[in-house]
Image (cartoon, rainbow, N blue to C red; front, side, top):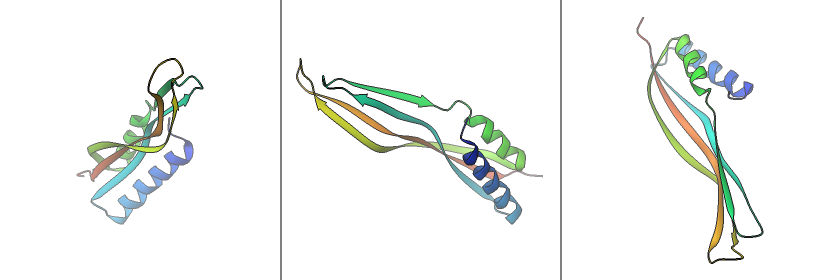
Length: 110
């Protein structure tokens, strides 16, 4: 589940936009991240962590009066590290970053 402050902010944004009469709402949410640690041996281990409860929040936004229209995702790299392999050639690379979903809603017909 997204952190409570993220949930509160997204729902407040959706309510404010609806009350203002906006026709379209865009909500960006972190839906996962890529993490990992490099080792002194030059190996690398990347770990993907996903948030399976994003749909719960999207459903609550629809409950305010929005209709889900479209989604897209992007990977935002926040860092990486590499180390030389000890017993073989090449490097072990670990990339870190966020997977962000951009969700587009239209005002639902009454």
